[in-house]
Image: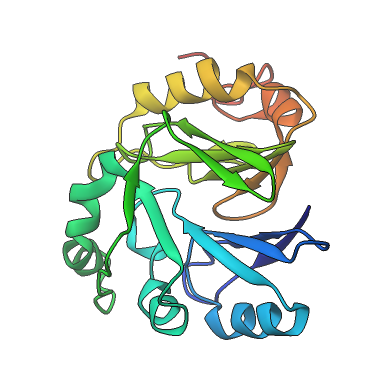
Length: 215
């Protein structure tokens, strides 16, 4: 399995393409832009995109969905059922940030952590991690965790936006993500990648060497 990272200019919300070199199957985690670069890469490598998995319904992680759906109408888009209302209010989110409005497209399936996704003979496990938003999800496959805006390199996602909650993100990280193996690589929604082991030690909020004290 190979992970290819794409970073759009606006908001720098990371897109990750996970693909298998042999089967040519691919899945996209978040759809924040960089569409032309992703389209070109899919074509160049001869990859078959199977689905788009959204980590949470903030507009900066959904900005490329309309164009993707036009280009690949058969590719399914999956998102947390607990972010359904947040997704319905994409226009309001954009207005809050003074950004041009992002058009909501049809979501093929609203999911939760009871679902597992089949991909190239492996399972993508869904981990519900509310806090940054009510419906924030992380996706785990083998030793790769796609964390959205729940866990960053030595940081956490902000909790002051609609449906955000600090105590919930604390529980999500301490009781769910930090229970995972230290070696698991973390592909974050913004900024640099990290690992579970590194964050257990160095996360500014919840690591052993936290800079912001205990909560």
